[in-house]
Image (cartoon, rainbow, N blue to C red; front, side, top):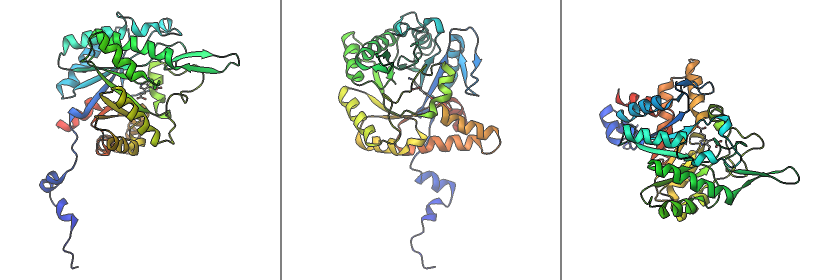
Length: 329
Ligand code: PBG
């Protein structure tokens, strides 16, 4: 053939492929989600094979190992004892609660580790919702927005006082970013960042996570606050609002089935964009790999590359530590 233009020339050798590669995964891209509980031991999570619920001691060790591999940040998810759960989730702003103690332990042991906390009521709420629930005279459930935002601000302040670097509201209430920024600034926490779960979808991919924390809603679903999977423009609306309200970083969640949303968000804001490869995404890869149907390592790394290529600056992933190991080897 008389073909002057041959794209395959740019793929001819590993050296040329390295030169022309547009995106590279590094451990610095990853945020490791860590589950914790009050128990003294570390427990494998039944609904999430390969993931552990840590004691405080185990948490500090695991975070240290991930950090030593180049993972810059962790995000904390507590399992709260049933008898501490209440309708107004008071335990979420207890300065001696599990999360503040974990933050202090992590910062003491690993001062350079970035500690991120999840701000939402669901682990602490006896109704299992991210916000305060009220039942009306017809028995209909309502998630109260403004009342919830007040509690979320107290929760964010509690995490800031304990030393969190970044607070990350995952509740999807309206107006929480502005309220949280004002509350943090009023108490002198100008340096605490807000990573907003701006576009968080009402997703079935969170199922295994709720099993891990016993945090599934007792009644109803999360569709009046989390977004409809059919919507894309609405994600841009949420991101622009959060940016205007003072978010430092925005997030899209889940990640893999929402790559178009990540790409769209990347185009509409100059803020850093995070994406969360959630429990269901992780387990689909893990279960197929365990069955011997796919190459787990290759698929995991390719899924993370896809998320980065779509426009994510950082990825929350249960693979963070393993992927860092794979990338180093
Ligand atoms: C709750 C929260 C959820 C996840 C992170 N924070 C679950 C939910 O919204 O029901 C899911 C993470 C995952 O599935 O890995 N605020």
